[in-house]
Image 1 (cartoon, rainbow, N blue to C red):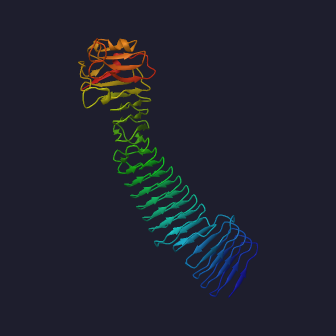
Image 2: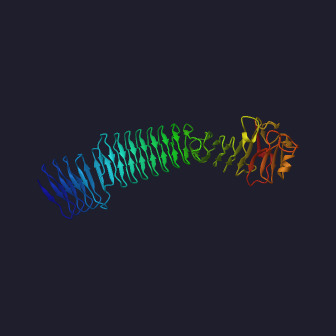
Image 3: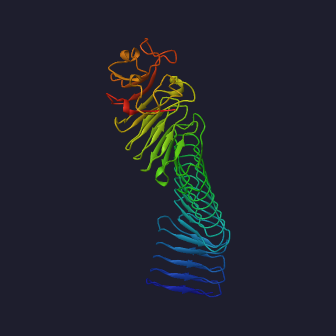
Length: 434
């Protein structure tokens, strides 16, 4: 049995095959036990402690210390506020109190568990189970098919390579699956979920969550927001969004920089759509009241049924009004166009919906009398024109019964749209389609 004591300089102390006691004192020391159950004390400084193959007692003292663990009987002793300490383990291990970081070493499938502090747990290339428990933790799976459980706190879970399963808990978590086909679950809290490469399944759970399947156009991700006001970031039209009615006000952010000329339709129970980027992309609403926003490209926006808010933003945009049957306000809705630019944008009317129109397909009204711009709603009711804009209310009306009072038996209101902050429109602002 040997007792080795360093000084206040940087020492390297190596034990014997017997049961040894190594004490570094001051300085940044490197202490190595051997075969027996050794006792290592680092003292002050940033020390490295490796007990060897026995069941050892390791105490780093003050400073940022590194421990090597390879025996389930190894005991790490740290006190509060003595630095940021790291354990490198070759076996399944749970962080003791006041140790912040755990690194799984070697190639074996071993597991790591944190403590109540803010921990960083890092896996190896095998299949690991990492559990953060309390605190705001960072869990990185590394290679392999890993399972990450953040526990309580605001955690960051990084799957890395492989087909990983990562779950938050209470708290606002950030979960990144990395490469592979990952299963991510935010559970409670305001969570951010990123699938990365691969066909991923993301579930937000309770709270206002953000779900992003990843940037690859070849992947097919399944995104379920759950309750709360969720945001879906969509990069590929192959992604599937699952939302149920009455689960909050949910939004889709469509990243349109990665492809051009395609379209996206809000599925049932989704409320809002915003097209991002600069390329031209088309957006379609559903049967409820939607908010559709274009980008700097030339967008086509169609709210479908419901009273929708349509914003084209920059570009030459088309606002489409059509239904699967002849016009009623219920079928088409009364949409508000928030930024219509006369001479640049187009209001598109379908003859299959607005059946009283006789103008030819194309820009403007080939039958000039079918459009009028009038001062008031009362004048719109008795106008001979089929499509009438009222400058007073900024409303666009469908008026199939001509000069008779009202807008015909098809609908009592006759309103098609509200053109916000517009005091006049001209015939060439319209496009007639089949």
